[in-house]
Length: 208
Ligand code: SF4
Ligand code: SF4
Image (cartoon, rainbow, N blue to C red; front, side, top):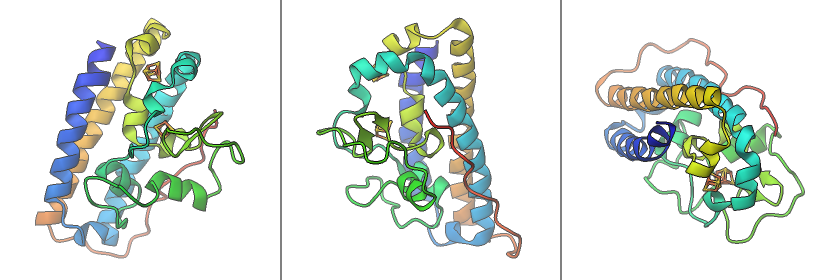
């Protein structure tokens, strides 16, 4: 069941939600302070879910360290929703990000939270992969980096971790649907009145 949620379900849902959100959003209204507050609320939930998935990942870190398949290849890992939820004002709003720095990395750099500083990068892999692991804190990584589990990874988990993982993946699927609804609202709703204080977008990281 975990594999079903983690692979075909998450992958298909992620593609659909990202394309829908990108096509329906109103890029300028989405950047208004009132909508920024709503993106920030989603971002807090997203970070909490990703921290939970990161905790589970510790149990199979040794399996992934030996394999390394998921971080191979230089394509970008972040999608539209990863960028806009973390920074609603980002200019990186196309489906692909062939250039420019991942929004999570921009935030980590600004807040001095990049991991494994000074450790050399891995050739032919994601730009964020160092020889000691990913440089991006769990809650700032693209969702797919935390949501993907293969059979070998799942076999390293306890029953309890599998159940928790399914619960968190369901939350992440729901959150993506909420993000599509919010993107739709930026297209059809006038932004609510401005003036309130923005919620903080990020929380302190857990390092691993
Ligand atoms: S999740 Fe599976 S395929 Fe990906 S790096 Fe870990 S062991 Fe390899
Ligand atoms: S962001 Fe980190 S976890 Fe995701 S693919 Fe790159 S190195 Fe791997």
